[in-house]
Length: 496
View 1: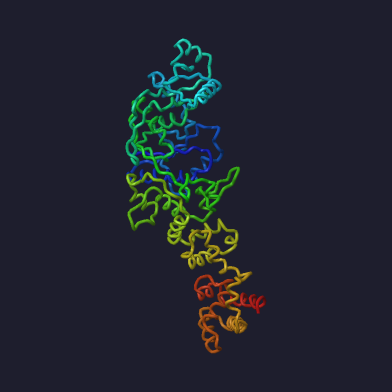
View 2 (view 1 turned 60 degrees about the vertical axis):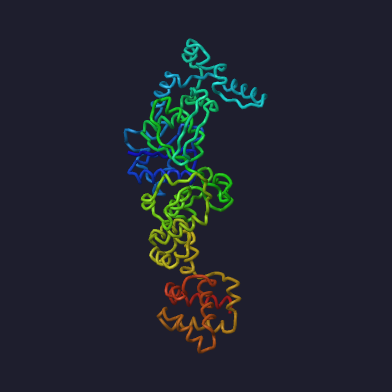
């Protein structure tokens, strides 16, 4: 059974780069009939932000990326929060120390700071490893008796990994292939902090092993840690999972990782749903993006399906996804491409659901009848890229224009404008069939020397406030003759 995990830290809202990582894990697991796990890596309590864990769960649920296992799941592989797994780490760290692959280090922050300053004076970078560990205060340089006394009196200490000297560490990645690194370039990473909590590197490896993770699919920012993780697996004598490091999602200009700042400058969010924290921030849902559109677009950042099958549901993505086809090059975030995908998914979405989303986003939309709003959306949605745009496309079907576009007014302010307005009002007062209005106006215009074009532009401006909008007869049929009459009377009062 293939098992993968998405393991975010609850340090704030989930970035769409994280959503893409979760998505690729999910697609891979579902494609091979495996298990997708959510593990919360919450050992860094100083950086933890209240509400983050629930936000991550809510964001994944909104996207349809539902974990098979995670917080709240009863399973032999749990618990799924690292803060609840200390008994695993305590047990495994003792094994590493006993086997000689890790050691106690008693150096104080002041002593290490002094070492760094000395190295800086020589133009060097301080690295705690084979080159100096025997001259520092640790269980390698001290006698067994001295170490025992320090531990017995509770001397503050960390546990470091004993990185081997002059060993060629060979690593393998499903996306980037094989690589090597000289272990002499590595430092003796801290595995257990002085407060007794594990570091990311140690907890990550222990948890992946105990949860029987077969494939670690994560962002490329973890590539520099791969050699250490390989060495830890070897030190424990455990089989390694397969690794795949996904490419970065870059800013639209291709310079640097997609950031909250670039999103703010570009006028778009970088989170899936609204974050309500110290600084409230909208997500793509608030921008009017549907989960299907966002997920479909994110799937193309680093991977692409066969030509001709771009617009895909989550189920269809599972069927065609191939981890082997993920590329190593970073992908630029493209808002217009996201809108294109969202437009396609919006066309496939039921109008009733679009009503729910639009009324959630727009106060004015909440004041309209749901059935009527669904009907209106059906008339205009082929013109919309986002849910948010729907209101601007339908509002004239519910409210008369208060102002009129100046360019449109210039085009219709010709001889006969007053006659057209009078004829519209007269027709509305003397007939009950809205489907005949446009046809009769054209016939009337032909008899009175007024062109059909002028009649159509004038009627549209009266009803819409400008020359945009859907088919004119559809507008008339939707709003009814009483509304047409009132709008014509209002326009006449202002402009005739």
